[in-house]
Image 1 (cartoon, rainbow, N blue to C red):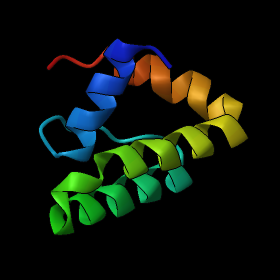
Image 2: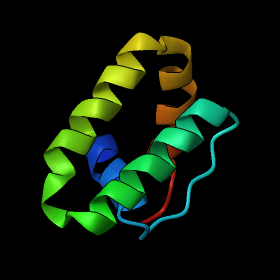
Image 3: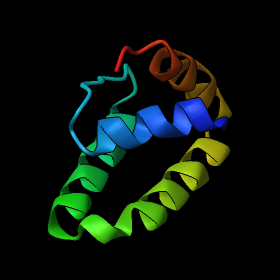
Length: 74
């Protein structure tokens, strides 16, 4: 995933940008990561690693959602 998309995913995880996927599992992962970051703001790297792992496992979800996230406005 490119840097622009990573940056936008980080904004979504921090709650600065709203994003809702049509995929329930991806929405649940986003919620889990948001909660984790609220409890420990220094864990962004591990959250991004978990996102990469999920998106690598489900390339169709990755293709659709990463394109949608890339189109989000900051």
